[in-house]
Image 1: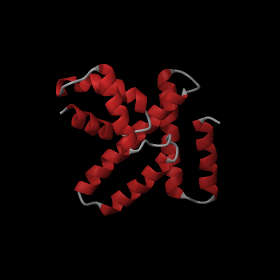
Image 2: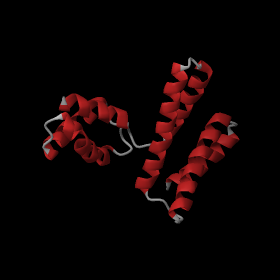
Image 3: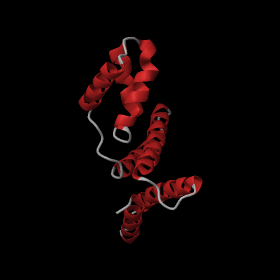
Image 4: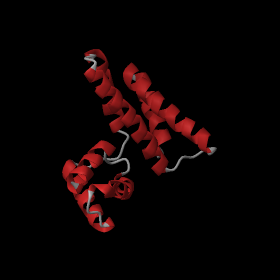
Length: 148
């Protein structure tokens, strides 16, 4: 079952259960997938593209969450936290910090990075390995930590 089919099924269930917030998030995700399909000029989106789109949606929500926390908007923080939980349910299982650290260590050895100047080279090699399974900020933190 494709992600779009799963979203359609979940959307029907959310309508039946009258879960407005969940329905809203599912509709946003579905729209993002459909917009990307239109942009690419195709009917079907590859699973990799689906993960990329979901990751983008997750990043937007996490960034907004940080901004709302800084502005002390607890009403919006709660709503976004609920949205993040819903979006996470469609993403692949996220890597733990230990797993991310291990991938970063191995990649640093693979590319032969030795200094902070190699940061870009390491990030370019790591990100495809953790695509959709780890937040870029977490990867960034470990790369900086191991290169300094």
